[in-house]
Length: 104
Image (cartoon, rainbow, N blue to C red; front, side, top):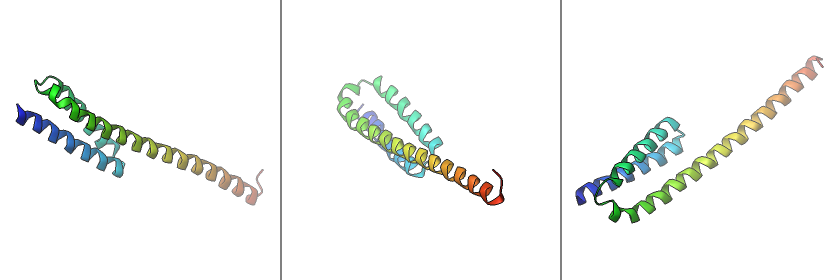
């Protein structure tokens, strides 16, 4: 039973490490797959007799998960800002080209 708990904990740690790497790489497909694996692993762990003893460690994993979500949100905001900047730059370039070519 303890071995099963240790195995689950090791798998969760491994998945969190992979997820952090995928976030840095902006590999959203692999991140989504790792997230699904994590959810399946947690659901399986909930059925295990050792889960009650494991719950305090799960708090640590939840904190890491929230940290990952915050990092993803930061990256999303950064990307949205770049997209807005790009759109404004594009509109300015088009207007400048029209001005230079004499189109109004």
